[in-house]
Length: 125
Image 1 (cartoon, one colour):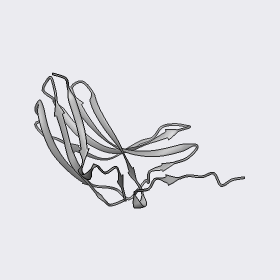
Image 2 (cartoon, one colour):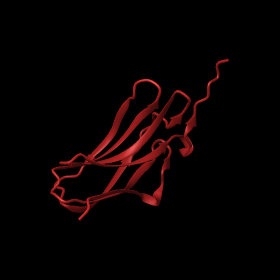
Image 3 (cartoon, one colour):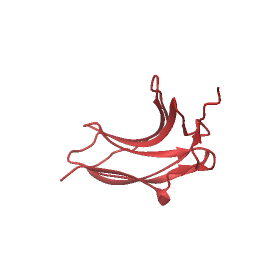
């Protein structure tokens, strides 16, 4: 049996506005009993310079077993917005983490007004 993990977002959405409700289901099939299963909503920076990470929300699934489906629901924060620029980008994601073994599954999402990533432009001459 191969280990499998999935994150399904209700309506297959990937773009959200601040304050929206994000809901869905996580599923896992494992080869050994998990001790910890957690779903994290976080943002991280990518680009030049030091990478930063901020965990916004974490849902711990109590008493996990080898094979499960668990529903989740959370309210998205007001900031920071998903953005992309020549020097840095801010990316939001949901990540399912399972221990032991450090298993992870991740889905990137967009969090910005109207669900549209903010594009940073260089205005200096």
